[in-house]
Amino acid sequence: QVHLVESGGGSVQAGGSLRLSCTVSGVNFRVTGMGWFRQAPGKQRDSVATITSVGTTGYVDSVKGRFTISRDNALNTVYLEMTRLQPEDTAVYYCYKYPASDSGGYWGRGTQVTVSS
Image 1 (cartoon, one colour):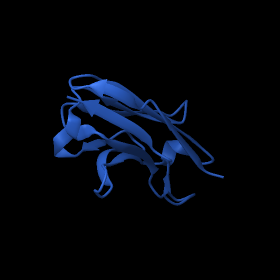
Image 2 (cartoon, rainbow, N blue to C red):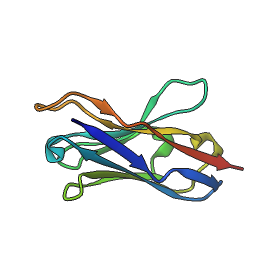
Image 3 (cartoon, rainbow, N blue to C red):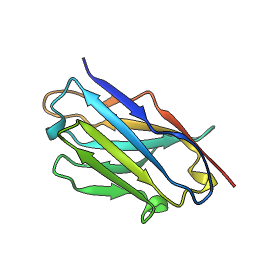
Image 4 (cartoon, helix red, strand yellow):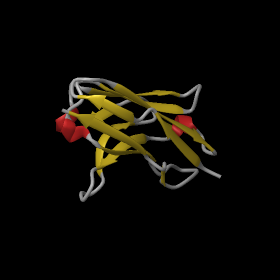
């Protein structure tokens, strides 16, 4: 059974930093692309950052230079380092496992990030 467990959300003031973690079990993590999405109240869920199985990363323009996605294959964990947070970054952040040869796509339950001005 596949599980994605996020942690690291919280409340910070504008300009602060947070690091999100997502630990995956039940799949071959090394061959899996991963991503972070976010959903603000009343808005759709959008991609924030992605990382392929070989470590190639991609970011939405609004977070480039502020957020960094990384992975530790030994720990089956993907991270999202968020710096210079702004109130518009406030959202529920979801970890996502992209479909791979051995399994489909899966979502974590989400973790709340709140940035106050």
